[in-house]
Amino acid sequence: MLQQLANGVFAGSIYALFAIGFTLVFGVLRHLNLAHPAVFTAGAFIGIEVAARTAIPVWILFPVVALFGAIAGVLVERIAFRPLRGRDDEHFAGLISSIALGGVVIALLQARYGTEPQSFDMDYFPNRLFEIAGVRVTLTQLVTLGLALVLMLGLAWLVSATPLGRSMRAVAENPTAAKVLGVNVGRVTAGTYALSSALGTVAGALLALNLGQAGRDLGASIELVGFAVIILGGLGSLWGAMAAGVVLGIAEALTIHLFDSTWKSMVAFALLFAVLVVRPRGLFGHVKVREV
Amino acid sequence: MSEPILEVESLRVAYGRVQAVRDVSFTVPEGGLVALVGANGAGKSSVLAAVSGLQRPASGRIRFGGEDITRRPAHRRIAAGLVLVPEGRQILGTLTVAENLLLGAHRRRRQAAPESEMYDLFPVLAERRALPAGSLSGGEQQMLAIARAMIARPRVVLLDEPSMGLAPKMVDEVFAVIEKIRASGVTVVLVEQNARRALRAADTGHVLETGEIAHSGPASELLQDPRVVKAYLGVE
Image (cartoon, rainbow over all chains, first blue to last red; front, side, top):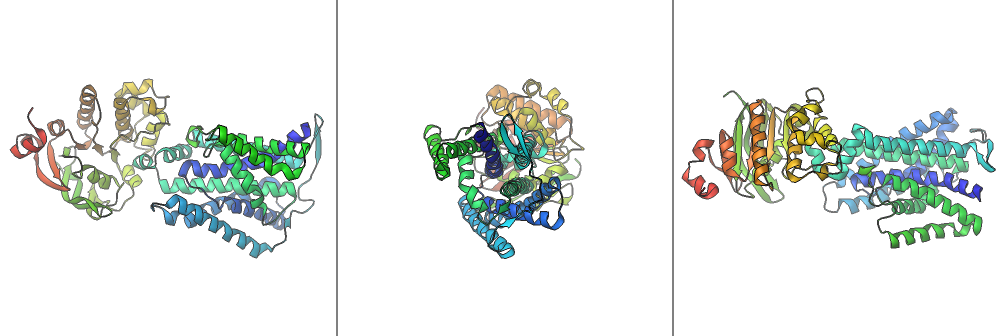
């Protein structure tokens, strides 16, 4: 039982990492970036390739992946959202164009890596096993949890205490007022996407490290749960996405323990359904990015 | 009066097919206080939107300190010292009073005044510095909006309807602050519906009618001009 809880927390921390990137862009810019799962998948493939080519240690690998992610994020905004800026339907149009861009990204990954899943080298990362209070955890899981925590707290700090975060909250609340105050809205937009996608690619590489491999459908496999996490937490809420990620991770793990794995998605969505009936804004719906 | 610090030449502003400003030209001398008055929808705020860089003009030219800034983005105009206090105040209500001030200063890091100077000038803000700006009263929010502009130590401050929606006592306070700004040597462009108050404070006035300047002159003369009195000032 305790073991299942722990497994749920590890899985949940990856869900949360996926979700905060997505919810950050929504919270600041009101964009629904549906290319996020494809960027997540790209992060996994890039992580595997960089690890194989350079054999750099894991604590350098993740910053490299995050850098790729940041660049990808800026490109996603330029390609899928900026050309539509100022249209009456820019938010809906951006949602559609980001789905299309996500498809292009997956196709490009397939062109480069083929259709077979890519794997980390067996000995790339030492998979040691620990036992803490009767719960068995791997080193990978500990790294995952630690990195996810550091990144999430780091993001919360960045949003609440830095000049960039202040500008992001200003844009989130009132883009016109932000512009009046001389906030460079274009740069804040780019920065928000860079952060979001950096978190997304790191989450993808972390999941791949946990699984040992990644296929083209890695993003699709987390997409629905990830969106459930975002809505459960309250769209645009960073703390909500973090908490809901762990809640869903645990719920899934307990379902597997009590029934079997075929039921796990059903539980995730039943939970989502139940929360939306009781609290349509999600668990943390009133705590937006700007209030972190 | 010295060289004009701000020059607006044949300005046209359009929103889609609606022409808000047709052909407006005026200059603002350094250290002066110029009032733009006129009815609702006459184009006063659109002039300020174009001068501050929030709205791209359809045509015309804007010069600030002798340089053509017509195509410069808003944040670079602020960096140069041309700062707007927008209509409706545009306070960031979920941010604290202090954070609003810091945002006002962030484009002019070197020139900006210390936060404490603003609290000396606006004591009411000092008590509330850690509170969300949305919790302030309308008058206090207007003071914050002005403080947020003044912390940037602007060369020219553009005030858009600063007395709008305020109680008479707060209107007096706002105009007292405008006098103080002016006395400190900062150039002011004041857009107001309260034409009498604005013209009393100003040295030059322009009356806008449907996007064009209908009357111009020294503010004291406009206050006596029968056409202006009849249309905008009424009987006191």
